[in-house]
Amino acid sequence: MAKTQAYFVQFWTPVLQYFMGLYHRLQKCWSVVKGFCTNKEEEYIPPAESIFHKEKILMLGNILTDNSLALEQRAQAAYRIGLLAFTGGPTAGNFAAEYMKEVAHLLQNYEMVPKIKILLLQSVASWCYLNPVNQRRAKHLQFIPILINLFDDTSESPMKSETNSSLLVKFWGCYVLSVMTCNNLPCMQELKHYSSLKYHLQILASENWSGWPENFAEVLYFLIGFHRR
Image (tube, one colour):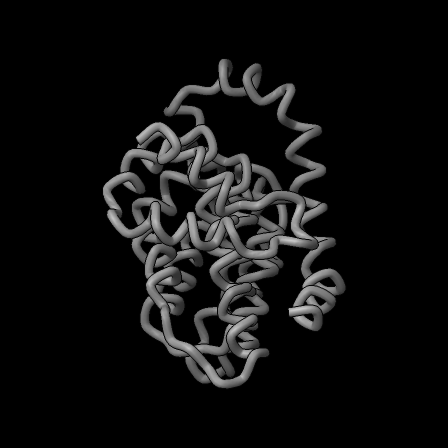
């Protein structure tokens, strides 16, 4: 586990700190912004010419959807699309939505090593972060059952490194579901219907989350309201 924690701190902690830092800075103005936004305004898709990062997203989208390329190369493209969707604001998030269908398809239908799976999960987290429209789209694309399936993987490996990598995937699954569930009542309600989820989150919450800004299994447990049942 020590090696896995060191690996995590080196490669993934900056990404988490980036998200969490932005969250704390934007949290105070979130309620104000939300008050000025209606569903009609949120769903508005502007002309393609005004989309920030449009050309980069198109280029990366071509890589993501190219079946002739290696899965890792496609996952790297998805990861970068997610970051561009976040940094480019609502218009970029709307434009990137089309490519999230491919991310859902890959997670649901392809066997892949944990490293690649984590890249895809990070792309979804970036795309949904503080974006209620994309959270709803992710729900519509069936990301909730796809993510829940990550927790049902009980396969054990004789190699400790593989076991730790599998646990890291579940940690990221908790994080993505936390992002999707934040300020999203429909997601909370749907998650309550998964009878095994409460048990899985209790187990994951007891694991060592050293290196993460929060224990996201515990965060998700409380967001769903399992502590009240």
